[in-house]
Length: 99
Image 1 (cartoon, rainbow, N blue to C red):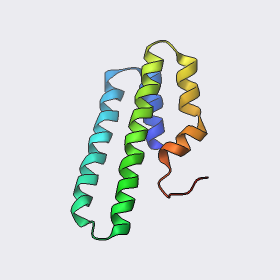
Image 2: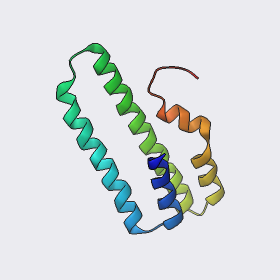
Image 3: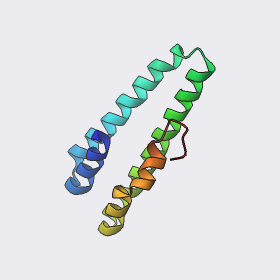
Image 4: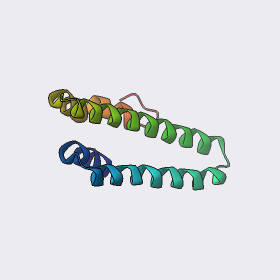
C-alpha cells in the first residue's frame, strides 16, 4: 500500500521531491535485499529471494509505465493501469499461487 501511495504522489504531485522519495525507497529496498543475500542458505530461501526480486522488477517496470503515461498526458490510461487490481496482483504475487 505504501509503495502504491508513493506512485500516486508521483502521479498527482509530479514534483521532484516525491520522485526523489520514490527513488530513495527503491534504493533502501535494494540495500535491504543485498544485505539478505549472504544469509540465503537453502533452496527454499533462494526461491523466495528470486520471487521477491522478480516481483520488485515487475513492480518497478509497471510504476515507470504508469508515470510515463501520466506525464505524456494520458491521465485516464495511467490511472486505469494504476488501479488495475489484476495487474497489481500479478506484479506483487510472490507466493507462487495462480489466484
